[in-house]
Image (cartoon, helix red, strand yellow):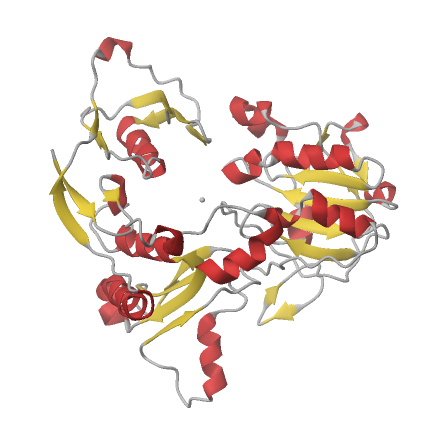
Length: 403
C-alpha cells in the first residue's frame, strides 16, 4: 500500500472559562486574583470526599493550599492524580490539595472511567467561583496559597512536586514558572516598541521560549473579512511547529492522521521536547521550545500556512541544518478491517469518550472513521501507519493496546 510519507517531522488540554475582574486590568482583559492577592472567605459547595460536601476557605488557613484546576478532557491532569494524592500523603499536616473542575458530579458519572480514577483528594465539582477568581485557558492550572490565604504562585502542574513543596515548607525560596492567561499579551504588540507610524501589513516573528505563557497555538481573524490571517504559537518544539504546519496546510484534518511522521535519528533529540522532568521543566522549555507569529493580508490568507512552512525551513535549515518535507513511499501499514459486522457494538446513545494512557488507547461510542483517525494520531511513534479500511461510519467502542 502506498501512503504519503513525511520525511522529517513530522498533548494542557484547553478550557475556556468566564472571567470576572478582581485586580489587574490589561487592555480590558481581567486577570482575576494575582500573586500577592488574598483568597476571599467563601464556602465551596458540591465538594467530593469531604464531610458535608462543603469547604469553608477560612478553615484552610494554617496550611499551604494547592488548587489543582482540571477537566475531564485533560489526560495529563488525570494521569497526575496519583502523584498529587501521593504529595498530599507526604505532607498531611502542612498541605491541602483541592481539585477544582467545571463538571458537576452528575456529568462526571457519565464518564465512568474518569470518575473511577478520581483520587481521595477533596474535589470541587461544577465550579464557577474559583474559575472566575483564577481564569485560565489551559489545564492543569495550579494556584499556590500560603498559610495566611495569600496567593504565592500561579503555575502549571509540573511545579507541584515533593521537592518544591518540601523547600516551601522549610521557608526556603522556591522558583517556579508563572502562567498568564493567553491573549492578554500578544507578540504583535512588541511591534509597537518599534514606534512604527502604521501597523505592518505582513510580518513573521520567531522567538525563543516565553516562560510566562502556556504551550498553545491560536488564530487571529481579520475583523473585516472574517478570514484567519494571523497565527501565534507559544512554546512549541521544532517538531510541534512542523506538525502544525502540516496539519493546516493540507486538505483534510489533520494531514498526519493517514501519514507517517518520521524524524531522522540524528536530529531526534533536537526537535522534540525530551519528556517531563518536574525539577527541570523551565530549563527544558527554554532550551527546546520556540514561539512564532505570522500575519498576512486577508487576501493572502489561503497561503498563510505555506508561508509558515517556508519560514520554518528557512530558519531551521540555516541555524540547525533541519528541513521538513513530504515524500511518497511504499511501506507496510496497519490496516483496520471488519471481519464480522454482526459483532459491531450497537450505538448505546451515550456521550462519546476517549481515553489515552501509556499502554492503551480506548474510544467509546465514536463514529468509526473518527475513532480510528484519532487513535492513528496517538500512534505516530509506531513504525506502521494506521489505515482505516472498514468503510464503516457507525459508532464503535474500541481499545487498542500499544504492545
